[in-house]
Image 1: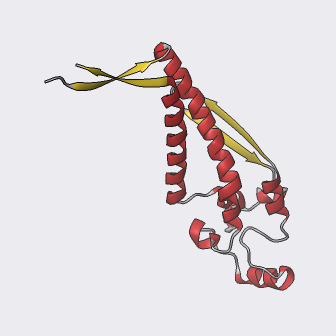
Image 2: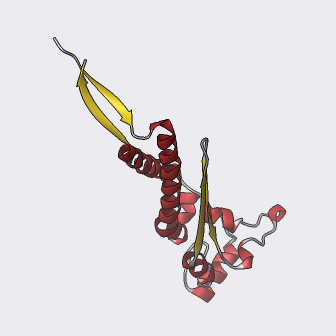
Length: 163
């Protein structure tokens, strides 16, 4: 009785597959950072973000002053300047080698975003803005895996042969 086996053949050899993997990884990281900026960053300014991302509690006096003068309680927002600035522009840089890929999304916000007193209990707004949940990390990994697998499928073909 004949057996059915599957053989994976790589077009161009191992170098082509490695190059395709690096290219796919770079593309996937770039897409991930674009997706984060477009879909996940706005959630950091939404009403439920304080509990979801574990922001440091603001003082009662600050919250009263914000409600009285700005008429809202959106997290990470006082006047809306920071939100507008970080949503307006993002520079994405991605690098991939044989062993790893890294990506950075640089956003440009007001100076006060980075000016805080670390030892005085002040909140690190920049870190709060880029914090992620476990669920988001899983979604990021799935996005990268799908993108890389799709690209590698274009390089490899599967043929069946009777063994």
